[in-house]
Length: 165
Length: 129
Image (cartoon, rainbow over all chains, first blue to last red; front, side, top):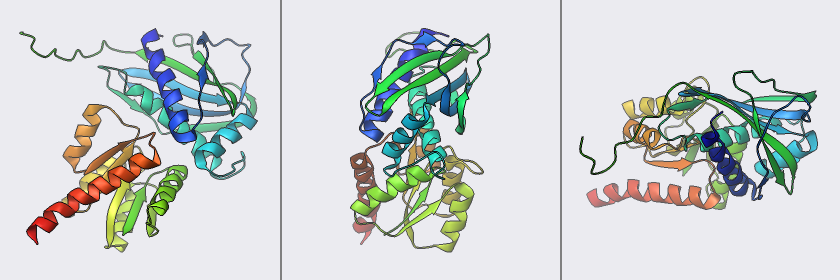
């Protein structure tokens, strides 16, 4: 995965959490996902398509997911609440949408969100596009943002003002 | 003022509803996609403002805006979406939105954009009077 796609996600995570949850995020050093990484209980997933393909996963321990979803929605949410998956999915949507605006020159679309709930699950990765894990630490708890991206074309160069062709 | 919120996320509709409530707007209708919104607008001719998300199932926000503008050029429409690229904003403006809010948004931003939109929409009407 091209590292130039990592910074947009770091900016997006901090922006979304600060704006919508009034919560600061300490972002750790991104690492490649390995089999021994702690599995999640709640995952919000967004697919990317177009010039940039892949997916983004917000991966939470159960208690952290409840605190995050509650802070976002402004009401107490537990995993069995009908609005819980909606809140987690919308957060994933905001992070992915906010990141893709910084994919300069790439035309990218995002999917509608999916949410998986269940202890000890993992979102598997392909060999051609391994997940990069961005560890996040907040007052609400720790969670990971997993990003797997492939690009199918070079970015479209924007014309430089004043350039003569 | 009757306002229609169109977003497939109930969480976002609730956040918007709370902001509107603080602004004194309590007559709020909700739709989870473009199709529901069209039905709602058909049943409620007195809606004065629509906040519309872009990415939704069944009918997306851009299609909804285009459909509304086929019959109503005046209804104020604000797109509230994660789609932040300039090309998308231009696409939405071309389709007929009056204003654009990028998610994530603060309550202040949403309030400002609503006030800005309603002022802009009212200005030509006042000039004609």
